[in-house]
Image (tube, rainbow, N blue to C red; front, side):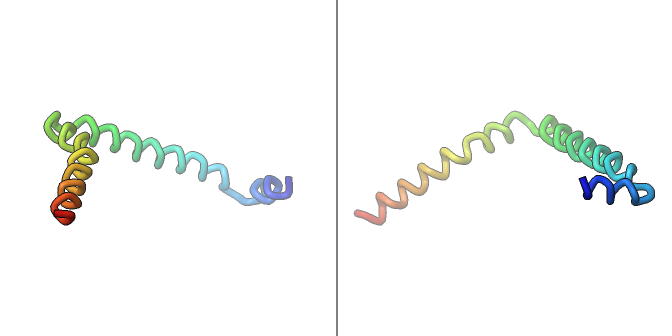
Length: 66
C-alpha cells in the first residue's frame, strides 16, 4: 500500500489515467480505420503471405537438392 500512498501525495496524478485512456482510444480508432480502409485485394494478398512464403521456400529447397 506504500505505492498507492505515494501516488496520492502527487498533485495532478489523476490526469494520467485520463491521458492513457485517450491515447489508447485514439490508437485503437486509427487501427480500426486503417483495417477497414484496406481493399479486399490487399486483405487477400496479406492473408496469403504465409502460404506463399512457405511454397517459395520449399521450391528453393527442392531446387538446391537437385
